[in-house]
Length: 479
Image (cartoon, rainbow, N blue to C red; front, side, top):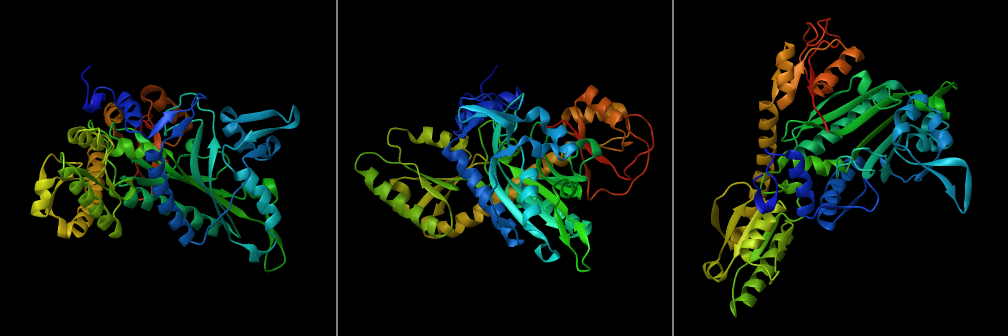
């Protein structure tokens, strides 16, 4: 097998190996001592912090407040909502012994927090004046994964989970769609991922939800990644936990609730949406270092160049650009160039004695092989423009890739061909048994019923029964 950049397996040879090697070599993550856990290293965690800050600001701007709920949940809480416990049972981590003795009731390490939030909402809500209750939590959760993969499916991961309670179903559904819109904006505007918003089929719904909505993004191997989900619970959890309010007319009614989440698997999505055989390619909005300055010089020249590089970095920082000077004296400039390509920095500036004398620096972009000189006097403005253009380029690149690998199909042979390379846009009967047949033969599942899909009727691509949805579904293999 031929080696890719810095010993990374090329994507076309083995996409999975490329990914596994890259997350380690780029310094994003390491394996934890417990199977399926990960240690997020500083460079990887900075990407998460930037994503978190962006999403947190959007959530708070819509009136939600952050709170925190316990990690340990009494097992009986999960059993109150039958579909919920059934859906999560295979993934639960359960504590049965603590404080030197067996516990009277086992405790579940939270796989999600609907039950504990429901318990608290039942205490906090009594009147229509308490509604809507708009809560959000940043936390970790544990789901015992059989086939873990760093960032994408790990036993413990980081996420945000919104939980809200409303007076009626219409208000709760509006909240569900509001959250979905927040995720779509983060994916497209911040992560430059060309995601599609849609509704899950019944078999793909969140355990205990009446309706589940999703954003789905295509990775560069043609597979789908569920990048965020928003769930309309109706009165299911309110009934199970007694979340009630007194209406204007004095009648006691059950609330309608929602929950919605986006997790650290988004970092995996970033890697697989934008990366190439040279390494990571990070969008400007989420790059820990947007511009890396590499000083070049020998002997007496070194100190002057380093001082100039530090001054330039300060100017860029003042302009709102995250700049970093790579002053590792033991490494050659060539090694540094390759290292920052591997780590996905959008822009690199090379600064040497001749550049200083001319009042310039050499600009190299992460995509593209050419270099050019830019004026130091206008560097902050020029790089601000370059970073915005780079962000737009990545979104356009991801959109073109998704569209060129999504095929409208009407026959089963065409469907099989399409999902082997990307996504199929097809009519479907809505029968779970038919979905199971499709998955058994192709490993593809219905990713979503697109919200912007055009009305269309016809016959199921697999079994020939009439379409149940009035529009085409997106099918694909998924992570």
